[in-house]
Length: 161
Image 1 (spheres, rainbow, N blue to C red):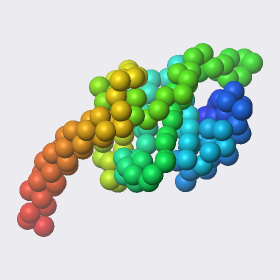
Image 2 (image 1 turned 90 degrees about the vertical axis):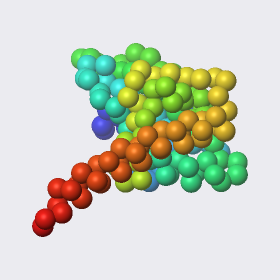
Image 3 (image 1 turned 180 degrees about the vertical axis):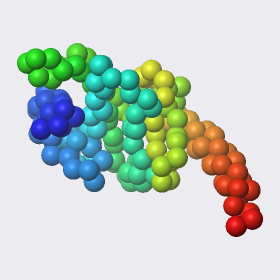
């Protein structure tokens, strides 16, 4: 079993659930079995340098949260591998998506944009969903400006083809 999968299984077990998520699922397990409350487990091997890990597709997140009653939670896990196997060093506990601070997030180019964590994890417990979406709009504005500049460079590069 892959490390990340083993961690998902262990974290789900700690929350009285079973990790049944697939690559197409928005979460790795359901909170209290509720299909509107998926939990996405993000693991970080402390022995490696993880540059801007992907959190979730921005478009997918927007579509999910625009449906009435849908919520999304994250659990961020730091782990290390030992001779006994995987040791979970720390987990964040349940973090509602709207409490993720945009101070540590960015949107980068992959498809419609992917939310990445480019600075140390930060929670904003005072931020509601509306505030989260305002931060997302700002991040998307920055993303689109970068993509527009990149497209102009490509256009210039291939103009004589």
